[in-house]
Length: 559
Image (cartoon, rainbow, N blue to C red):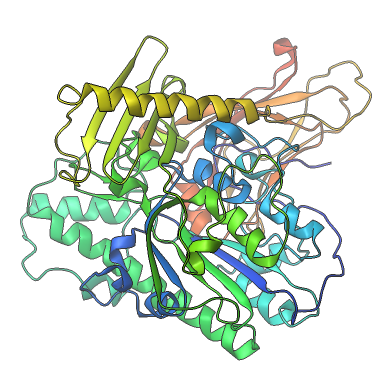
């Protein structure tokens, strides 16, 4: 048996489940949920942006409901997306660092819809990695074939299966807005200011922003004149996504005749700082977490032409955890116990909901968190007027208070001026944490049940020291093959990358090896930023039988 292991990357593996006959499409809507990495809501024309970046998404917003105060659940991808797909806050689902996995006891959106007769195919490169295990998507046998050609997998699945007699739930994460900010021509110049300085220092910063996957806080000293070109590059990527991904996708919906009875939800995993507080990126790319609004605000558009009125806007505070109960409510499926979000269906139908605060939790450094960072949590509670941010460490906790109503940029910390408000919000935060901890179930990394024979030193078949793995020759997959003679549990210890990109840890392995992928070509190239890759295999409880370290490389491919 081959089992995914690499917490250092976001990998995708096939999960198995048979198709289930479901109700006819005329009775039950399809559901398409797309999250966009690092998409800021203030870049949408439907949110008032003056640049014409998103005509396709703006058209969708006009046919549905735009939530103008939507927030992520965390400042990094995995924690937020698992919240989206389980309806639980990060302290309740437990996927709070790169090596954590979801408990099989937690209900998921895909699993609940599958049980109700939906087909929920695994078409997303994320599914199957440690952070995204146990989400209960159905096996898609052609995943490896289609995913290696980029976003075609979404379109190919729609062409082949969308008009069948079974309602479907499609989840896809669009990653192309993630750093580096390097839009393709002509989007690389369309929104750049005309007065970008030509001095060597500025040009060097531009080159870094266009090429660096990670940009730790303080690595670059940005000048005041940099704001225009930083935002111009980011805006170019947003426009490219709208034009080259969303426009053909929605056209495909129409050509297949599924646009009317499909619930379409567009959101994001988190926001993105664009020099509001001196840096760019988010927790995993800046190697810190701030929980300022620019990193937490996200778009949320819900459209269902056949079932909901269009052209609505809601100012209510909402979060990613609200998506799962909203979907289930819309399609008439009971919301399971343990879901912490609330259905937004009343708001979608023009009715009020009682106001609720927003709660956020993030490990310092996100996916790139070092061992020291993994012991630090930033947590926040936000109302429409106030925000409290607390940094929790083993030694002590510190807090900051911002009056959002008068200080929307969060430039003036005011806890000393309003200690009573800070205490009140901290009480809300503590009550929320207590509720989350009562729901928490330990992440599972259990091996399959088998006889535990004597441990032996594993033999690494591949990769061999010095190997350079090419995309085409590897079929877009990355794996470690071992001998299958040993019957004991094993761990793979890894040290990957250098400098800013260095991450290390350990993941359980099966005796015959591990496998991850397939990946898109773009994501494969992301993996090459983490060269060199080094690992060794250690039988559980027997460090004396560890293999020598093996170092290999991921070779970038031509796009």
